[in-house]
Image (cartoon, rainbow, N blue to C red; front, side):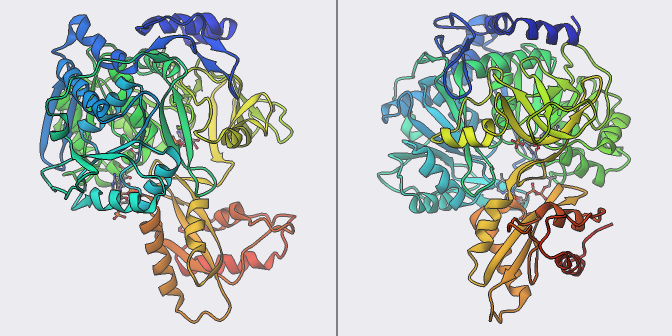
Length: 629
Ligand code: COA
Ligand code: AMP
């Protein structure tokens, strides 16, 4: 069947489409229908009973694939590789879940997971799913304060962490970060489980911390607990416009049905195939396509603890693909740009046998045509850009490789997936003609597997996504759709920036900068960067009478952002200015400043209070080497 038929089939009968997709899942009680008009934006398969862990693990053992590899851990950082079969995974997860249950974790309890790229991170997620506990994974590159904010919002009964993470050349001491976060948070977990890694053995706090292996000793393994289709499987925090992250909720049944559908239809993956998403479990890509998607489909997933370059070189990706016979590979454009910068002629690619590989998928940020072209030239394989968000959990737009390979239009993540009626709207919420730029929105309801609301924040959910364009979900991205339905994502409409495929809030960074005693006012923008896509850049207006040298203040705010948000913020650039450009109503003109920093033509906004400030901004930027071109 061709894509057009599949999409039209969904549009004419969404209920039938999703009920048929639901047949790919093992239900404890089959849902009576797909869509339920309840909750702020609708829910899916709400009256079904189902367990995620059963579908991702146990059912494959029952089906006779217990000896097949479920997880391969490939860690160039520790020079090690190990594999876990589906049977081993089931036993390990049942034991971990049993130990959590013996310590009081039940269905509906939250469990925070703060772990590096080790198989135990997936096992922790699956153990929660086995019990119906709601996990919230926090990315290891965040600082203690960010972890504390999430602890206070999720109010976990337990936290599962590792003693350390490993970045090239340095050990990330997780335990002191965890201890500091728990100290900062008002909510305290009942207990913490610590996986001691051989690179660092952390000191445990008696009465609070339990060692991963010890606490499982002698416990009864847990069976899978069936949960309602609309029971939250997890909460994943993502950046919004303020320092308070948004807790994206994922309901259990829609998540299972949608991910299972995508593995075959988007990624062309069947049971027994090897799928690799080179991301991190702390991001949505890690949830959907390192952990759940491949396992639900009965494929082998790779947990990669390394970087595209430097571990040990720009050939690592190709080595992993060769060694584990990867069929579909998923990464971020920034990772390919890093590889291209180190190995521009692709010499290292020639050292490896990539015959298992059928396609490369890119997401997380806009895939620039140069990067796609380079990869196509070097690999002679389809390179597929696809567009999605933490909120949606799977691709809104893609080239559905498993259905049909559509012609590629570089710069476009191709076409809307079934379930998504994508529209481009003007400010008044009216659809605009093909080719016209506007806000990208999706007509409600969103498909299964997408967010039904925000954790503890239904009002914020409505305000952030539903209120602006009634009847639609507002994606926060701007762009256009061409005459043939190809979607082009051009920019964010809010203050979210994308640094090395990581979604960051400039508002959160501004909150940190404002906390400096010398700073009266500030703004953070994203400037174009040839490797990371964007980099954050801060403007600081100082309080009257401050005599500390500007360079020192810049150094201090850079250190504060690293300390409070984390190294992943990659905040390294800031300059001191007298004033910030604003509209007459006092709104800071961040987009105009970003244009100046990127060397683009700037039309002085009609609403600007004092146009001369733009020259002052340009001069300050020149002082730190911007624009670059
Ligand atoms: N734990 C602790 N620190 C982390 C971390 C983690 N899990 N991940 C990143 N960091 C640190 C890095 O060590 C770096 O620290 P530094 O400032 O001391 O150098 C900082 O956070 C910034 O990291 P990053 O922006 O990733 O830059 P980098 O220079 O280390 O690497 C790339 C650049 C392009 C190689 C890397 O960003 C990359 O692989 N990107 C792909 C991202 C991706 O897959 N995203 C998922 C979306 S699909
Ligand atoms: P995240 O929630 O971290 O996955 O980030 C989602 C945001 O990243 C989207 O709203 C887009 O702004 C951007 N993004 C992700 N994938 C793409 C893509 N393929 N093309 C353009 N932008 C993308």
